[in-house]
Image (cartoon, rainbow, N blue to C red; front, side, top):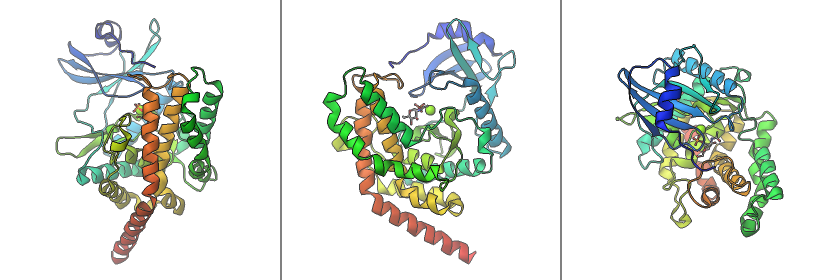
Length: 369
Ligand code: GN1
Ligand code: MG
């Protein structure tokens, strides 16, 4: 899918009048999401954040908005006021539907902050770990059945493999043959990559409400490098904490973006990974069960692989899901992610060692309390 942008004059004329706002000063596109379209709208009375929700991806848009409202409510009640507030339309709706253009739009307060693609600063990594852990603390007691699975089986590797095989079988754009080596490698990884999800399906790894899209870019920081909130709440739904830990690690300690083409330049910082896990475990360590602990080192390769297989599937299916902005963009993203998977697998012994060490230190310090 190539990037579609909405004309800001059209937005001002058709969408904004449906909300009660002061005089509009400017509208500008923000963010780098692959799915929705986001805008900062400056008005005489302050700035707001406007998003077009991609309802091809998020089919039950109403369910998505119910999830989001519930989540924001939980965060605000917990005293986490960094999270934005939803701005209802003039008619009191949590989003609006524009029939002529068949588009859905929602609005929240604008949160001033910045996000990062990765970091070399251990303090930021630790903060990120604590922020993901705090999110999990706030959501762990919620009844996860009250949150709709807006994209069912989102991080289920078995389902991702099914979709991949389907795309291979259909091969709509004749893209398979030149990539057969890569496709064969993906097939060869199936047993190793589905084992974690097998433990989810066996109810060994607990299901709770998680964020499901915790790449570092989705953590908002203030100027003092303190976390304000997690953003991009569309995929907040049942899942496991491993998906979130893994998705932050997929990005935070990696020196290059997910579509970097020079694979030889890709590097994962163990120091940054360690700082993140320390931050996470300091808050969440006592609450993990044996299976969550067992799989924690594998969270990063799991989530990096799932992105790889999703990008490759979309490439084979003709680029129908993710926005793309260059030739073979999804294939390049897939190659990048798979290269990182290999590196994460090499790092497994070190990760297992450092997590064990950290957990022991924690047991020690709680013994002494
Ligand atoms: C998409 O919305 P955005 O760009 O943050 C995707 C995530 C992937 C991410 C890869 C609903 O997220 O699952 O991790 O791209 N979101 C959806 O960068 O598919
Ligand atoms: Mg997202």
